[in-house]
Length: 81
View 1: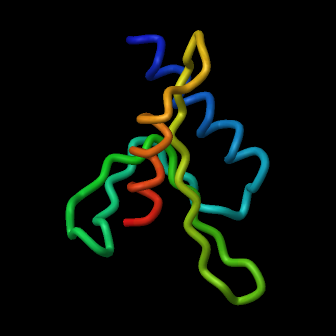
View 2: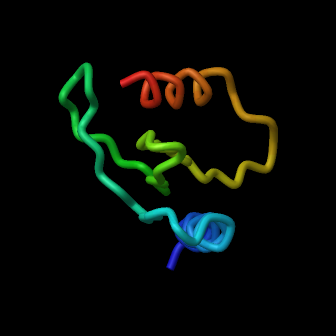
C-alpha cells in the first residue's frame, strides 16, 4: 500500500480519537455545492455543534518541502465549492 494512503488513514484515526462523536470518513466523495462535481476528500468530519451541522474537510499530504501556492489554491477551491 502506498505511503500516502497510510498517512491519510492515520489522519482519520487521529480525528476519530479527537472527536469520538463525529462521523469521520476516509476517502469520502462529496458533491460540490457550486459546481455539482464530485470531489474526493481524504478525510471528512461531520459533527453537530450547538445545533449546527459542521463539515470539515482534510487533505492529508506528506510533503518534504513547503506546500506550493498552487496546491493551496486547489484546496481553497474545494473548500469554497
